[in-house]
Structure formats: structure tokens, C-alpha cells
Length: 232
Image (cartoon, rainbow, N blue to C red; front, side, top):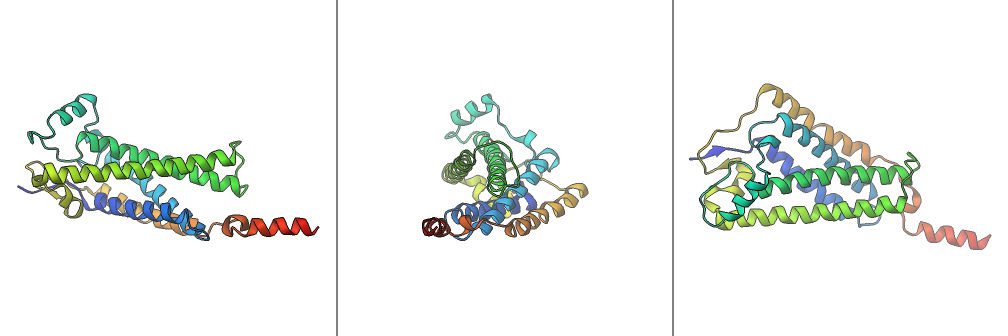
């Protein structure tokens, strides 16, 4: 029996988060693409904030209270993993922990990125060393990448050992081959979704227009400034 597990908003969020983080991560190391890096970073941060709220009042399987994160659940999951005796409608215990860490780490990464920009541009003076903020932001971005790698490994494992449940296909269709209750959206959730997928794009637009210091935009600027000082 096929059951509707992942509603359309949850699946859209999944793919927008993947696109947004991948773009921000790659563009962060390319000169003269700071605006796009900021834009995708703000986009990801806004997506995550709305997803965190959705986890409080969203539909079944997307709510955090439905995440089996307890220690007993983790032990049971690993003990029975290869026995195919228990299947989870939503996230399995380990996937639940990884997903929560992705959301938490992604939020911190976005906040650290904003604080770094605000400090470099003298928008805020929070008393934190600029180099510390830069290194912290890079650490959180790399942890984000590791967590996504764990997420992908989990999907591969589910496909290889529990393939009949259709976990991989559910990322696209929303359906799993299990017998349980279908997930549904009420009117309040549908109204919330409109904001969820408008505000992040607005943040993208705002962040793309942020002013960038010349030395941050052009790596040659620092050398030019040095020659000007020599001429004096």
C-alpha cells in the first residue's frame, strides 16, 4: 500500500535547501561572486527559519514531535537495521538526528555569515573578532557539508537495505510503500506555505543588493592600496 508521507512543501524545501546551500558553498570560494554568496546564504537561512516553525505545527511526519530521536529508538534502529522488521513512516531515528542537526547548524551558519558581513561593513559592533567570525562561519559551512554527506549515505543505505519502502522515490513523489495514515495539510498550513516560499526569495533579493567593500570584491584591491602607500 502506498501512503502519502512527504507533502509538497516539505519536498520543495528539501530541494531548495540543497540548491541554496550548494550554491552558497561553491560561490563562497569564487572571487567577485560575494553578492550571490550572500544571496544564497540569506535564502538558506530564511528557508530554515520557516522550516523550524513548520516543524512545530506542520503535518504529520514533518513535525519534530514525530521525530524518533530518543536513545532507545537509536539503539533499536541499529539493532534491527538489517533484519527488516521495522519501518518508519517519516524519518528513521538516525535520519531524524541528522536532519535536526542540519537545521540547527544551517541556522547558526547563516547567523554567523550575517554577523561576519555586518562586522566587516561596520554595520554592527558586537565585540567579536572578525577573524573568529570568519573561521567560525567556515567551520559551520563545512559541518553542514558533512551532515549532508551523512544524509546522502543514509538514503543510499535505505535504498540498498530497505528499498521496498521507496524512501528514495518518496523524496520526489511524497509516497512510501508502507501502510499508515496519509499526511494532510490544513488551511492554516497552506496559508503559511505561501509566506514560506515568498520570504526566502525576498531575502535573496535583499542580500544580493548588499554593498561590498572593494577589498572584499576584488582581491587585487589590497595590493593596489599597498602600492599607493609606497608611492607616498
